[in-house]
Length: 157
Image (cartoon, rainbow, N blue to C red; front, side):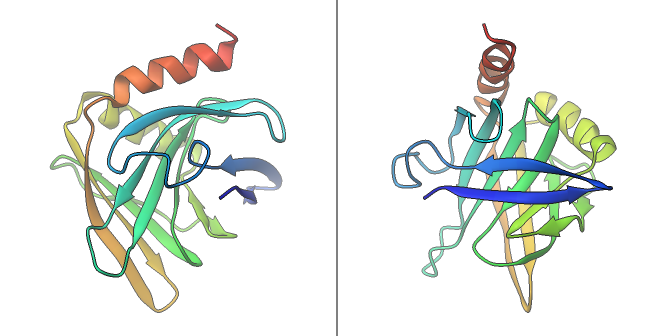
């Protein structure tokens, strides 16, 4: 299950590849993993497939890209707005969505990353056209370790 999408960020379009390692079935739900892609240039990141624990089988993929320093959320459908809340901080939202992916701008990604590094859990929700996925809760246990692995891999270490 490989998803390659192009997200317009300002004027330039950045190629972002979101793919759980091998396939969604191979990545345990609710666990942070480090993943690298070489499609469109090397991009390593820390990501989690967040299971909605519903009979509908809903899930979201949240990813931090070390190559682009961006946080993104992918769901099954056309996203309109993604929102992430770390612990009791306010939700941070983005409407930069296209091709099934919502991406946070540089400032919001930096703010969220700082919160993610010190927080204990997140709530993620994705507003789709006509429906809402989430909010789904995810522990941040293991995020910092996988983030450090991704940064090292991105640097070639």
